[in-house]
Length: 351
Image (tube, rainbow, N blue to C red; front, side, top):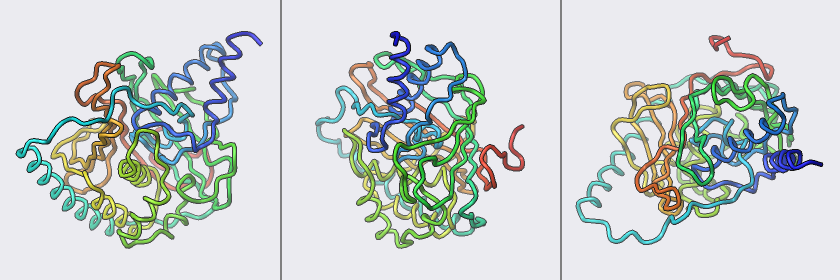
């Protein structure tokens, strides 16, 4: 086998690695893009009937945030940020007071969002159907060692299977537009092992079975979430909740419970104005994680309080020369619907 073939095989092996091999927050999009670019280069940009990426516990990470697309395509490079964490000294009293005010505001806002969610109308999803999500996404296209270079916004469509049985093919994904990975190709989302309904295979039926008491729900998520190297458990739970809220469909009572559970996570704050990759302004709920030097952000419409999208930031990275918030990826959820077959577009979706 020649060197190019070996690199391609290695890249494909990484992409199909077990779900337990997870990436630290804000990094999986970058590694997914680099690996897929290498595949395209090695194969002369020919269509790749490659095994689809393994599922990860996060369906969106900027959530990074990105729809199931990013999260499931994450590979097995368990790397941590250089020079993250550590003691940054005492927090000034004025900053501490401001942080407390933002936290109180976030709790109130999340409860308002929960009330709005309870008033929403969600049609139950059958086990033989798919949840369709169409998003606009942008992610880091730079090299591992170099500075962050955001690519062009492009469309990502996902079809997530609702079959409650253990599955190796959890759904399908298709990207289109400049900087899309394998544009126009509908690719299966696969796991090396069959995945039962749960955090890694969140069906409507499974989500509807979760506790609606926010304390009980938060305890369950804290127990079951997998934490990446260098990441705090609280951030892992916050990110998981964001992914479930942005990339699935569930009964209103369960959506409301997730928002109320998020309000109980320490360090959650409100930002009065944020903008998603589609240019839509809204209020944001955010949490910064000192352990992994990352910050996740959920954006909501200021009036309807509907979920708009998410953003992910690196807060500092000595190797890259990052000393303040640097956007690593962003997604805007444009449409969610229920369809009967993968590859089928929901009514109103772009042709």
